Every structure is written in structure tokens, then in C-alpha cells.
Image (cartoon, rainbow, N blue to C red; front, side):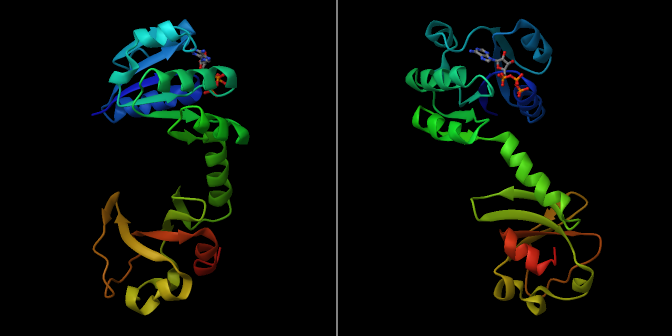
Length: 215
Ligand code: ATP
């Protein structure tokens, strides 16, 4: 269980609060808007109304005691940047900040953010990938080139073994495992044969996935 200081409770911040609570983490939620704070009260372990650009207010939260501080402010970049920078100055162990423009990422990283998430962009990339193919069921970007994909088993792979398909040599893709009824199996050998009721977990470049899975 991690302790998380979550600042900014718009749609994104509230979504983060919901997921953290579902995962069993302790969340202190902060927003300057009382209504937004009230909306998450049932999800979080603590909540405060206040302006996160105020050093005194942030200090009163004891930011150094949290495993992670998340700055989920998007549009108000001035607030986001000031908050990120203050958090680091006040001894935050790890600061994850949200960007909502390309240029934000650079400034946030230079001013105290250890990591930056860019939800609109990540979701846009995902939507573009998903809507152009029925085979890509999920994807997690690992860096600018490589992603982890969950893919449907192509019809012509059924009954064939991993060794016979040899997709690492032919396409540069690595099969990590399979998933059946939400259960992942990592027991992949050259003898593994795919069945219709499972999906495949593959690491590689999207371009190679496109070629291999004829997308
Ligand atoms: P979202 O895109 O997540 O729906 P939004 O568009 O409503 O967010 P943002 O400007 O991204 O609004 O701000 C997110 C939340 O952060 C809002 O609830 C806002 O009240 C809060 N917020 C912004 N600045 C501060 C600040 N300085 N101190 C505390 N909370 C802040």
C-alpha cells in the first residue's frame, strides 16, 4: 500500500482517486474547489481544501511523508508548475505531474517533476491504434518505439507452434505470454500452440505488429 498526495480533482484527478482507492492505496486529496473535494470524500482517506501554490498550505500537508505526489492540474499551467516545483522543494519523494500540452512536459521535468503523464496524448495515440484494428485489444507504451500489445490470435496461427511461427526472427516481435479469461500465462515455449479462446501478449514496435498481424 502506498500513500499518495493527489492535487487537482478535475475529471482526471477524480479518475486517479477512484483507481487508487480501488487498488487499496491511501490517498490525501486536495483541491481549491470545495465541491470537487466533496465529490471524492467517499473514495479517499483524507481531503483538504486549499491552494497548492501556497507554500504554507503545502507545508501543512507534510509532503515529504507521501510515497508519491501527483499534480493532476491540467489547464492552469501556472498552478501546475508552481505546485510541482514547491513539492520538490519541500522534500517530496516522487512527483508525477500531468501535462496537457507538448511544451509542458519539458518545463515540468525541469522544475521538479520526476515523471510526467500526458493523458490526452496517450489516449489519442491509443484511440488511433485501437480504432484502426480489431486485433489490437490493448497496448502499453514502453518507450517511443516499443509497446506491449495484447492481440487476438490470427486465424492462420491456430494450431501452429511458436517455434514454427518464428515471429521474433521474421518480424522482431517477442511473445511474452498468453491470456485466457483474464489469467495470464507466461509459460511460452517453442512448442506452445495457440488456441481461439486466448489472446497473445507481444512486445515490439507498432510497425512490426502492423506487418505481422496484417493491420
Ligand atoms: P480535468 O481536465 O481533469 O477535468 P479541469 O479542466 O476541470 O480538469 P484543471 O485546470 O485541469 O481543470 O484543474 C484540475 C483541478 O485542479 C480543478 O479541480 C482545479 O480546481 C484544481 N486546481 C487548479 N489549480 C489549483 C491550485 N492552485 N490549488 C488547488 N487546486 C487547483
